[in-house]
Length: 205
Image (cartoon, rainbow, N blue to C red):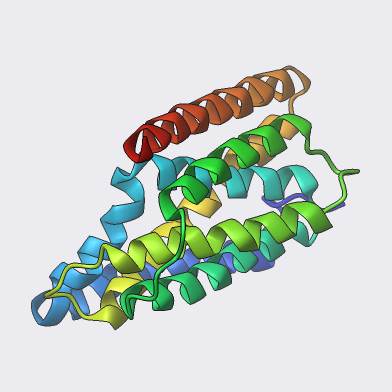
């Protein structure tokens, strides 16, 4: 099986993303920089979003093959749907709790996933939780921001976080002693998700 690093198509896509991202920022900086930058930074400064999106990349690398791009793409597609629902203020029950549970689920997936793991259940949950994450982004869009540029910002950030997770996963599975470390990472993420869930549950008490 070809590794991600040796995949020429992935390298070309990554180079294009990194090359185009600065130009996008500067091209719209004066017109709607706040909208793009708000969307770009929101997943990074939200711990729950940050952990979930990196976890998606790690899990996709653990599953390997076409899952390396299929699972992140499925998450992003679900985020777009959820983001649209959030922007137009369609309510979604237990949104924050769903995000916390997604971090727990993805952390557990990191602990248990490998090249022989079935992908249907993981893919289904990734799509399901992607809607929650997208919805939260849409709801938290600044009132002065353009929905299009804000969405472009958080999708760009999400994609780069997925790539980061994929690189972490690929590096770990290439070294036997790192696989155990990756399981501890998954346990840590599941633990962080549990804390977020308990905090969110307390708000409803």
